[in-house]
Image (tube, rainbow, N blue to C red):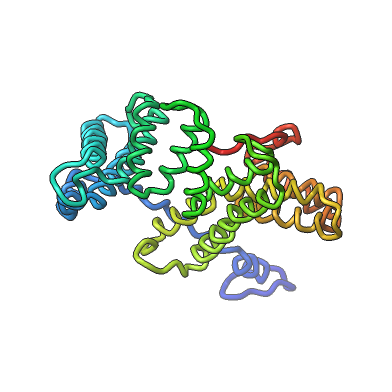
Length: 341
């Protein structure tokens, strides 16, 4: 060692400093949680937990079977269980929809009838598309007080799906469902009065009343998402992170409420009152913050052009990027958007 060099524990100072300064290796990333699939034993246990005379419980069990079967991988090891679960679920839904025995199950369970009607309307879960059967089931469920079925019964009457076109009856069904709190029906009424459909004269006051009633559900969706993110979901339905996540996702995908916000935003954007543009921007923002891609693009436009909000090109760019990631990248893609069905 040279005369000017110092040592520490037999090492030069430079070497010791380098040793001390060397960063510790980064911890290994945690392994992703293993995916847990349902087993035959799980199905047996779930089946045993539901009373055979409980039509509501049996209907929910059938839906659970379909959800869990859909999650199973398409692999030889799960092929048989997957198909058995699908078959058992659809047989169970049909039994609850058709009715049996006496008591609550005798005339069929409305939720099972509605679910099966949806299968026939969409051709889902191996069911052949059949609008006649769908309309018959919507009607049975509607007469038993199932409000979403009443809305879809109205759609059938409007479009002539499974029955003759009857605009008067369709309007009655939409009003009944909307008054019972069905967001899709409130949106539908708003559009009917806004555009003068089903032989109704355009009526701006009625249109805004129903569109705002539909849009109000966006606040509920936002609250659910915020509560879930804060871990304050509470209640049995959200007892697990998975259930809470599902609940938030379902709320934020209330496309009818989001579309109502979109239409209200467009309405106020064209207004002449002093605060109309601000109202329009707020409606766009409400829907955009819950991931509605057309509204995300529109928020970007408002921020870029200073419509209803101060210009902010940087934030506008972020919203345009978010909208593009969600599937909307140009103005042409949000022109004359159809109603969600």
